[in-house]
Length: 414
Image 1 (cartoon, rainbow, N blue to C red):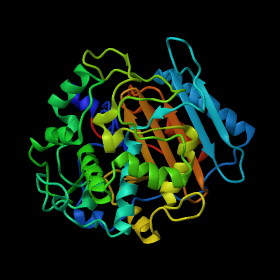
Image 2: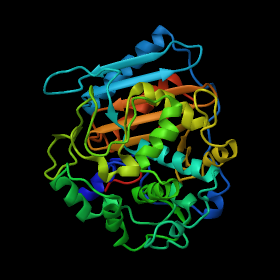
Image 3: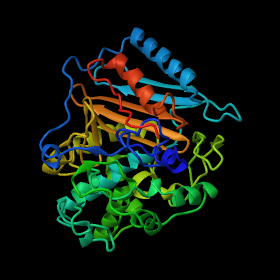
């Protein structure tokens, strides 16, 4: 596979593209193009298995989880993992395993900051939906109303951008982008530079025709938020989403800053293919699609907040009708997996994953039992053509929710 394709795997959102390394920061698990008739996509949510939601978190189940996590770490060569599982009325399961820093041997810990990659998309789309509620934007407005120079900009809607059905080329798949990034991982990128890598390519298909995970879509939505709010994207998210949610340990960095304590990140998405520590790489290349940083505790809060559209204090984050639209999950072509407005449903689990060089995360919520699962890893190196976070999420959910197993599909190998 080409180096730029491996990069693509990095920022997974919902279903990461399988064996590739994910586009550097913002791709969902299912980054590959999938043909889905638009008429069907508009009507059918993803199927959800029936059966008991979750098992009681007994000491025996906790020991099974410990063993499963260690097995995945051993087989997939994962340096460090933190896992949280929370269900009302059940004991919490919060554990850290392995090391945060292979050089010093510092242990992984639940309070550490981590780069969350494509989970950033859930915040950017939430910001957009708040502006929709305020009549500052319309989901069915063409992107050309807000941003000039977009190929097919008079036809691609904000909804299609959020649903990953725009047909635009993914900038993080461009060979020139890969070369620029890997030659100097600390360099900053502007949104306009990122779009230029995309717009020099022809559109891949007409709007609404297919599901195709694409970081370009979120860069455009981030620009819409900035234009219609009059604020920098990070400032808007901090004021209107993070503060009311009480998420004091989540941030949208302006450069490569990384609060302490944090896990070092290990990746082979490098110019020479050798493993490197990516902790100080500049995530601006992911911007609205994958630049944010968070912690286990804050992501625990966010999982239910984004799945319900309601802040922890009971106030609406987005209007109930808007949240209902968000959770319409057109099929992606993969059994049990649907993708809505910047959020996915994988066999009943609502949320998003994230991947960028050195880091992977999963933040998902199971509404029937109000169970939340968050997993943080300090590597993005694939295992048997799968994202390590997917392997871990599947192992955990096979134990706690056997009727709702989180297994993101693999769609291509190169």
